[in-house]
Image (cartoon, rainbow, N blue to C red):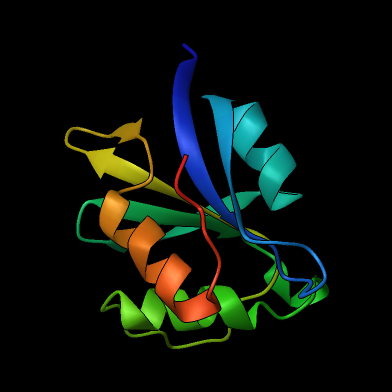
Length: 114
């Protein structure tokens, strides 16, 4: 089943901009963005999808800062592109929450409103 959502994408490479992207979500779409097998970090009402074997990817300092500022303690560094989506029980993804988008705008001094 495909679900259409607006995701907050935080690339690892600093030369690539943080942006909002409409996605038709299924497991394959998440794997394409994560560039491999996906895992996630959960916050309140959101998830950051990441590559499970991220150590082979570039470090993602922006995603790390965003996730920490959103209130999640991290045990390990973040690597690779992070895809942030809203999350509603019992497991449905939704658009990236407005508060995460606003936080990214403040932290990275970029307009993302769409």
